[in-house]
Image (cartoon, rainbow, N blue to C red):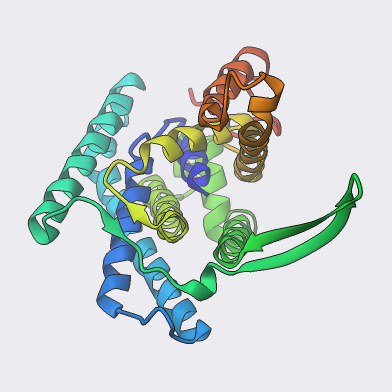
Length: 306
C-alpha cells in the first residue's frame, strides 16, 4: 500500500517522493493518538473496536492526505521546472524534517517519542484457514485476526484506487497528465489541481496504511517509515513503477520472498545466516531488477516527458 503512493506520484511527475514514508509515519501517529483518546476498553465488543479502528484510519487518511498536499505545494511545486535531482533532494530534506518534527512534538506532549497502540485480545486470536498432513503429521494453517483485517482493508483500498484511476473523470485526468502534461493543459485539464489531488490520494492511502501498520506492530516511533519505505520503493520497482496493480503485486512477491527467507535461510546456509538477514532480500531484489528488468514485472505505464 505504501508503494502505491510512490507509483502514483512517479506516474504523474516521474519523481520519487521519498518523503512518502514519513507521510505514512505521520498517519500512524495520528491514528494512535486518536485511539488512545477514545480509550476503547480491551474487552469491548468487536464492532466497537472496529468502529474505533475505522475512525482512526479515516483520521490518518485526512491528516496524511492534507500533509501530502502541503508538501507538494511548499516543497515540490516551486521546483517543478528544475532538474529532477533538485526535487529529489527536497524530498529527502522534507523526510528528515518530518522525522524530527514528530519526535519533538511527541517529546513535548508525552515526554517520549514512541507510542503504543491499544491491544485488543479479540484481534490477536488465531483464525484457522486450512488443515493438511505433512510427512504424516497434521498441520493447521492459521492467521491472526488483525492480519486478516489488514489484508481485507488493503484489497478494498486497492480496488477503490483502481476504480478512481480507471473509471472516473478524475482518473482520466490523472492518466492524461501522466501521459502528456502540456497537451492535457491545452485540452482544459488543470494540471496543478490534478497533481495536488494525486498527492492527496497517495497521502491518504499512506496515512491509512500507517494506522494499519501501527495496529500490526504495536509500538511506533518517528523513524518507523524508513525500512517500510525502502521496501515499498523496491516493491514499486519490482512490479513496474508507474503501474498501480504492479505496485501491489511487487509488494506481495517481496513479502513472500522475505517470509521464505526468514523461515528457511538458516537451513539453506547451515545456520550461517538466520532470519535476521531476510531484510537484505529487499535490497538484493532491487539491484537485480534494476540490472535485468528495470521496467519491473508488469512494465512501466507512464508517458515520456519532453
